[in-house]
Image 1: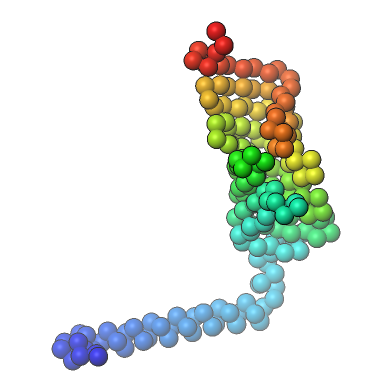
Image 2: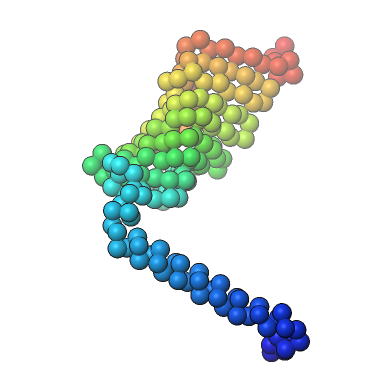
Length: 194
């Protein structure tokens, strides 16, 4: 089976070298584990201040009457039990709509209220679906009503259309958006009514 080791003197050195590397790796992992397990302060220092629990990557799905409402992924999460919230970083959410369509949201940060499943998004917030893209700095998702509320200026682009407003609300159940304050719309000629 190891006849190749007999053929060259250099080959005879390879097997002991591989064994030494494997043993060294096992010893290093064991020492690292012992250091962390014997020093609880070192382990706790990885949990952010104020958080009851911090985890690296998180996925959560919200359902109602057996149907998916939304699915969330984030690169990290800090759970604060007393405040009933989870602070999320680099998150993406898929909203499941009635007509089998989906809307996708990404944001730098989010705060999920664990008692209501309401989510507050901030930092480079973008929502997109098949034809449109909404950009803003902050918005809130109200889980019970399935409404997205944006109180900051926003811009919607897509399908030869550009819209801007000071605020808006989007009803996921009805598929209806209401824009308020300094609403500005641009529609290209091929989409125009004339």
